[in-house]
Image (cartoon, rainbow, N blue to C red; front, side):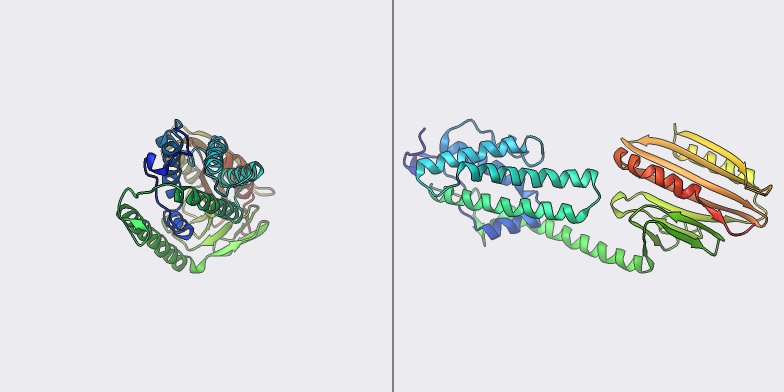
Length: 350
């Protein structure tokens, strides 16, 4: 079928929708609408040109990042062919290449930054660039659709059909829930203080100090990461979710060997099949002991690490416990300094 035929000879395409409405729908649905957009664009290209597009496969185009540049190239070339044969304003070959490079680069780059680089600002910038480029492409598709007879799949009210209204309202409810949860989190974290890398943490209640050598740590109220029995708690970078330190104290009635052995047994219990190590030594210039116990495990593809540094004093014991459960790449990145922090525990009391 030649796209120069009368528009009446085609199956009807999706109708024009204002760019700002399309952008609003994309934002409200947290980008999920992109899947539908690509599927409908492929469907309309198939109806106009008769080429073997498979809309259901195009639905997954934004989800599978690596083939995205090739899929976008096919879509852009088809748009150009339709524009040329319909004598519509269009983009040049260089503009197609530039758009594809920028959009695919920003889109894939945002995923890469989310996985490998802990920078929410850069992620936001890349998503914003990809979003603006998407709006430009939708404006182009609007011009193409206006050249053919159109019909919505469902009746539209105020720019959206019933299904889009339902989905949009559900996502709005989700947004409201997220903002409410963030508000509650801010209330809980009134006492939270961000810790700069290299800061020496002094815990006077426990008579100890240690240095935090990583970014993104913050002290949190007691009971945030433990059952409330700790003297002091720190939580790791927000993007990692499961990463913390806690300081515990014990009385002079608690036996050093018993506490160390119980910690070892607890780690084995919560991390079945873990690889564990334990070391015990005398504190320099004293006959008092110190013990370091660590256990590593892999669960659901992620890495877990429990480590404790127990120090004996004349009046009781003190312990710094660290825990992390993160993706393997993050584990490799954070593990050395994480262990260094825990092993660097110093007691100011003998």
